[in-house]
Amino acid sequence: MQTLLIVTGVSVGVSVIVFMSALLTGLQASFLSRIFAAQAQVVLEPPDEVARPLRHAPGTVFLTISVKPSQRLRSIDQWQKVSALVQRLPGILVASPMASGAAFAVRGEVSKSVSLMGIEPDRFYRIVDLPGKLVRGTSTLEVQDILIGTQLASDLGVDIGDKLRVVTGAGANVEFTIRGIFDLGNKGVNERNTYVLLHTAQPMIGLTNGVTSIDVTMRDVYRAEDVAQYIATVTGVKAESWIKTNADFFSVVNSQKISNTAIRLFVGISVVFGIASVLVVSVVQKSREIGILRAMGASRAQILRLFLLQGAIVGFVGSLIGSGFAYIMLDFWLAYARRPDGTPLFLAEIDTRLVVATSMIATASGILAALLPALRAARLEPVVAIRG
Image (cartoon, rainbow, N blue to C red):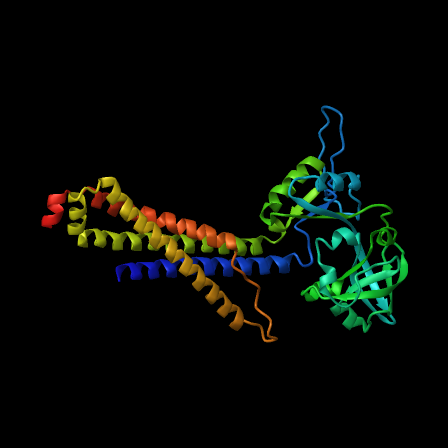
């Protein structure tokens, strides 16, 4: 009965650890996928223009008023070289150049302010999954093609195949054919963002062969700020990471990670103390049996190994049963936690590596919890143990 109770306790603790880890990992992944649905992890831009004081003759004293200049639409200097350098950095998946500027989308007598974004589809689609976000049409772009959001399409009353005139501040007035309508899950983005080919947008915004930004994505999203600072130092461009531009969101994600770690830590500690308490009682109750074994020739090392093995088996078996419980709990959660349209709130799955790691930690915890009771049992003298 004692063994059954402690195995059950270990199973409950492990199931909570595995289930909560899978749940919070899925929640974080859902948050990150939403924030990266329409933006890169690091954005490179030209450095800000600053006012520099004029040189003056030695000994001349005068007062000056420095006014911060307005930021003109400029290209990143030697952007091809910068893009190639960033692409070679370890951990970088893709660096995609973009030429973007303000424009007006005109349909009849209706006009809407939009952001005209020139992209290289092969690279950009690896950062923002526009093909997967299309509700109608195709993501394939030709010279006179454009992709727009669902909100802009609704405001202008247009659909696939319709013509849309785009007017920019640089004097361009170009008529495009709508090839695709996307939904990035953000009303503002769906209303504002429009996508054309890079070499189509460059002359329209007055940047022939230039780009206004380079979008960067990487394997480890939490290293974005370190990578951004390194790129800024090496290249001299302005580099901003999603961690900096979404400070409040990152604080929430980081708090979730800390909470997840704290939950696992305290549950693990409770499991260790539970195993230790049961084994201490077991040593006290089985003192006579231990004394008889010692009188029959069992060594202290054998008694020590006996209780350590018991702790390891309890931890390992409990971890396996607990992992099975976690799979059942997760299936139950995914079956009932759904949006009004029937889709899951977010996708979550149990990582096999997490199960293996938890089993190893639970087994090690069982051995650690059994250490003190095992030492106490090994030190019992046969005569004293038999007398009780």
